[in-house]
Length: 172
Image (cartoon, rainbow, N blue to C red):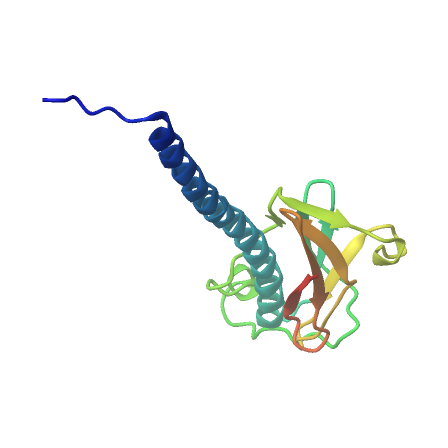
């Protein structure tokens, strides 16, 4: 009986096929986590804007989100001087209960993803040198258009002035 062994050519062909298969599979495996990171970053941003708009409508108070681009934190503050006529909830119950309904999260700030890289121009800053978004009880909102990247994908954030919805568009 003869003992059969693999020739050098057979080993090279199998190694080449395995390498080609690995080269085709690796990009698909590495893209999935990137996509998840991008979607989580965008979702967190949408949540911050949507909750703040809802809180403004529910409480009848104008609210401002101020972005700190270094830490990617949106700080929430109530506006004392409002450009719109503010609706006040009915005085039933205590002041604490009528301030914010229980179904809306009351947060002092929103921590956005650390993966966000802001591309800021001078025109996004207000007269105080801050990046601010304002939400009003009548559903309107205002703020600058911001450009940012997440995992080398470029996006633009536009806050709809009438509906206060954050529209995030991918560029290129």
